[in-house]
Length: 81
Image (cartoon, rainbow, N blue to C red):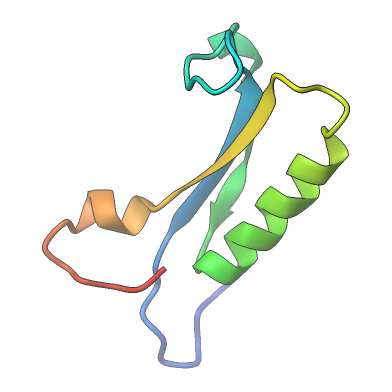
């Protein structure tokens, strides 16, 4: 999805998988991680995260996360989202 409206591209990664323990962040099987995608802004990443989280609500160990890639790529930049 090209960003053509002059807004700065703020990349976000959405991924998830089954956790070893509830409340933790260590995954049971790294080979089974679900890489949902990379999105140009937080709003679209959040929508993808929400859809995946709601679809996996029956599995208490399944968790999805939004990673602010733009903060890793350019840590000096102070950007919302």
